Image (spheres, one colour):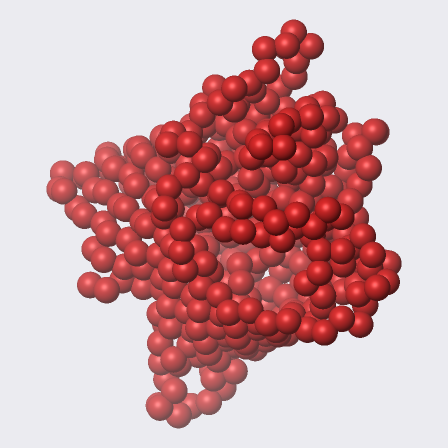
Length: 395
């Protein structure tokens, strides 16, 4: 089986790109707009059925049209240019697994797999969300798409339940930060993934109501000392950096309506110790060296209606045209330990309105206006984006 997906995007952002736009917000409230063109994801996958219940799948991803190393101008007071390495290697191997099917209820998958926590990680194809870019909340505080090397058990229980349980490496708290909470902790700049600690994942989906899938997912694992050179100081003996994540999501598709939503909550123990530890790391380390929140959350909902469903012409029988609206809220520092100040410019709401035109089920043309609402005195971050994307199999 050959397949893949890809996205090409153009955006106009009606706010300043200056690194001081948060620390000196008043000076940049009337700044000119700026534009961007991007290839967020271009992915190719190959699958093969060996027979007797054995199969494999490989998925290779190119992010932003190149390798996973990039230079960024950080929106912090120092305004430093940073070379960001998201994961070692020239391209991202998002999936590589071999699976044995024993029955409908029991399948064993081993290799590099998707971690199905939250809505977007399990539904990250561009035809599975209305916005031009992936939903911003989950894409901010969680690894997205989250992929790890591990073992997965999955299957169906009766007609209405699907489950998946995984054992994977733990996250690395050295890579946590105030902007993206624990998102960076899944990355590894090395030729291997450090696994001094392990983590468990569980997901349950229910299909009892026609047209509706409702899911619960969770993550548990320790993150401190899961780096290549962990501290051996005795004062850190009891520090675990335990990450708890709980998520609910749903997807409804019926009566020419598509509605999707999610709520994710996460808690990090020992966040004050981890914040101080990371800030004391060498400037040559890969850590953001910033504070990290003890709790983070994000929630969002989008609803779209197929306008073409009301037109009887056979010429558009296989086409769809959705008008949609979306609301999102997220905060990577929803709560902090007593001595850790909150960085409130990362807390925001997002209101989006737009259209999705499907000339074929596998192709979508998107356009949207997005209002990014920040707390005062910070300036809102509004934008207009258009994009074209595909997702499908070639044979």
